[in-house]
Length: 155
Image (cartoon, rainbow, N blue to C red):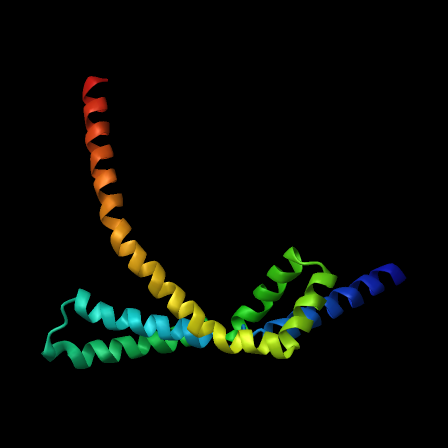
């Protein structure tokens, strides 16, 4: 019985370490970036659905409902436990302690503060590169589809 209790205490301590790590690394705050991405998606949806001026009010009301649902379903309280489990499954106690020490350091906090901007710039670079690559992918896929069509015709 003593072994189980010690195991439970170690597990609890590790959970506490992971939670502290997630908070120190700003994981709870990254949801704001996720919400901002969805806001951008919602704006694009108006264009995709070709929302007319007369429909804007109802579309805005609908998107507000979707946004409220999203924030209700995807919030830190619902994500915290699965994230803790994920970190516990992949990192040792020592790795968790080392990461926590880093994120609690001045440099770690600098990383947390600057990372959203770095990631946004990184996404822009990737999107720009994809603009050049996407037509090539489409061209290659079209050629493959033709090749496949010919192959199937001979089978």
